[in-house]
Length: 366
Image (tube, rainbow, N blue to C red; front, side, top):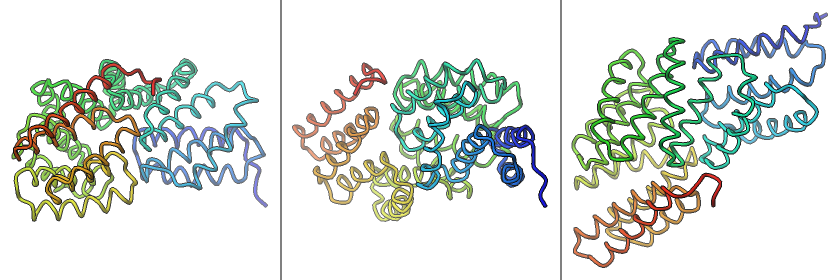
């Protein structure tokens, strides 16, 4: 006969498990999940602890798969009614924060930031430095994707300060990536390079983080229009197995394909685009689905603007203004080179309008 486990004991194990998730200690997190699951199974019924368990389990799945399946989402949705009858601020915080993380992973950035704002109002009830840093870290990424660069930098810097103090090296490197990316997107390319090269030295013992730094150096080179430099960095990132087999690796494969098309090495470019599309379809990535459509339209179908427009429309549906500007500028450059000045001008106007929207639109506006 199984001994009934006190709810407090199960709760403590869940806290330990969640700490490993934040630290990205995947093997330890898997072990602790098994232990927490066994305790919860034999626990005296307690809705609050069950809700904590479900939230952390959901976050665990996001860590392992970078997204959650429908089954997890349905189970997660059942937690919300519990919040209506609880005064547990930490439980409410976790619900809003983890919901926001899920929205971020699924590219629903405006929805994510609304949830993060609710979570931030409860952050004072979180008595854990690592958890506080984790919040700032994700807030930095979401504000970055919403083109709110001062906010993104501020949150990333707060997160990095705490992660440095705690010795969370990979998390601190990820914060440097956010800060460098914001510099790159406002055309401070030299500053971005300096930050990333410093991060690259720190990432030497961490293959996944090293690959993401190399990828970000590649993206900075793209914005500088240094195609050979960009190719070098994307190839270096993809040479790392952990990156090649990850969702971010799919993006690097697309980026390398796009660069090879620009360098007029079409045969090799097509091979990388095929590999990238397998991942794009598997992960259902909106941004890279749109970019792939535009790349096909320009380089494979040699100026099929219907495909380019389809890609831009898809980005517009998801308010990805910076990405619209990048795609439209690439189309404009392609058309100008082909001697189609009027059509090139049309796409430059699309890029200009997207830049205006990017810089003026608040996160609550549609």
